[in-house]
Length: 70
Image (tube, rainbow, N blue to C red; front, side):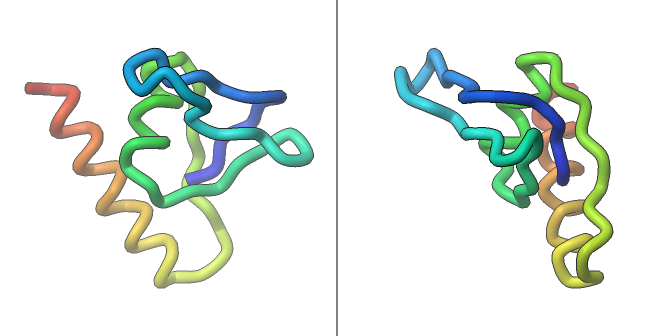
């Protein structure tokens, strides 16, 4: 999943940096980062790089969505 932003996003639960935006964006399939960015109010869009990455990304996004709904 691709997110647009600047600087560093802090993870208050872990008390460390969650991620750093490089050149105004970050692409990740990491469920923890996707969840943290969504909770921080960032809107993600699905990556357009490779089909393997896209399917991995969809699974991560689906797991985050299900966890947030419960």
